Length: 119
Length: 111
Image (cartoon, helix red, strand yellow):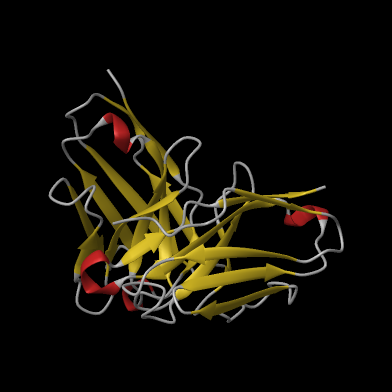
């Protein structure tokens, strides 16, 4: 059974850092692009970042570029999101998502981890 | 990265059909057949309903169908059921720079 389990969320002060992890199982992790998608309280979905499975190319939304870094450890089937210089507007549930094809669709979602940026 | 445009809310009665529109530009929806749709119930993770404009994942009811014309994609739900009440989001590939863009979401009420 496919499973994506996020961890690392919590409360952090503005300007602080946080590292999210996503443990994947039930599929060949290294073969697939993986993404992070977030949802601010009461708001819609926002694509954050994607890392390719084939060559580790990375892609970022303008809102997080130069502050967030996506990475993966295929030996441990784990996806990461390093978040620096956090702002109040980064407060959201962060979902780890498996891609169904390059630029195509998100076919499996984790349950999400909550990040709150507040003093 | 501007969001795709969806109606904020729609409603329908059980058994009816409804269509949710998703309007983008020639840089996203209009240029690629990579539009997907997601259903989200309150407090739950989103679920893929349609991908590549009109393909349905295994296990998704054939009451859900997708289409596209120009810069606008659509999700049609036929034979509305109470359990279809949820938020629906469209998403499109937008090229190698912008990459992905979501719609603002549509809250569907089944009266």
